[in-house]
Amino acid sequence: MTDDGSARVPAGGGTGRDADQKGRDGAGALTHLDERGRARMVDVGGKPETVREAVARCRVLMAPATRERLLAGGLPKGDALAVARVAGILAAKKTPELIPLCHPLVLSSVEVGFSAPDGPGDVGAGPDTGPAGPPAAASPHGTGAASATVEVEARVALTGRTGAEMEALTACAVAALTLYDMVKAVDRGVVIDSLRLVRKSGGKSGTWQRPGERPPGEGPA
Image (tube, rainbow, N blue to C red; front, side, top):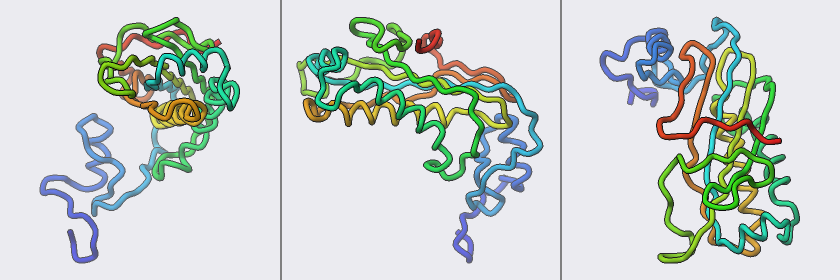
């Protein structure tokens, strides 16, 4: 730490401008820190606008009986999937208010869908992610207990100077949290896990696909 309390930049770290260039070149610099180690919003004004898309997924594990009620619309709070979908879309638009250094973006589209990769396929007109993805998690209801999965997928697209990864991840997380809120009256043991970016495209770095993940589907109907 320096005398004024700011974080000291490691030797060889270079100036903030150098760090920006390294970050843009994919060298792993933390571009949200200035030359004195203080948080700042990255200046993207000089970057060209390109079409960008990001896809994120996570899993919601619950008791099989809970998922049956979820699919049948038999929960005390009503249609959980519809509410969670709208919550995820709203969350994508609110991301800069939740994540301090995110840029406010003009989003072209936000899609949130649900699937049951270990069960009856499509859930509420969402993309089926299939068998690929993270390994199976432990049951939220104890060793040996059965569990059922609902996978959430969020896809965000825009034309701009910075990507939509955080918007997709936030949409996915809030949709999953909303599902928990909708089912907790009948199942408080629900677990949310494996929140991850699946794919991003656009910008200088181009397209990135997480290894082992099935490519995103055609999206919710």
